[in-house]
Length: 165
Image (cartoon, rainbow, N blue to C red):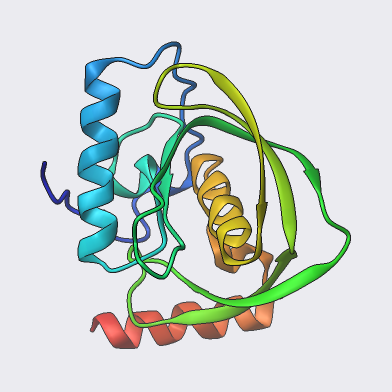
């Protein structure tokens, strides 16, 4: 396993939708393992392949306290979302030093291909749901700050440039 390099904002990969995975191969399983190592090294509760420059719809999530509930997703798609919203402070290793409070559905039902290649439906709630939605956004070429007002987004990006400089 390997810790992969996180690509910095504003790399074009972060704005490009990822390609679907047709099957789960040994290469995808190795990618998931590397992504888990990378997620743990950040540390974070999720990582999308696009964040490391791999343009495939592959993500990992582990929002557990013990860091022992690794969820491997390929081609994740939200089927249903709760009308109740939660607020979480979200950030991205692609844009270090900044974060923002984002409102997302408290729960989501997601269809995805699991590590065995089986298409699965699963309900996610709380921080796990927030992380899954955050990763799905990344795979679609969206960043968490895209949900913010133009003023808040501009302030966040200005602050990020100062942090980087």
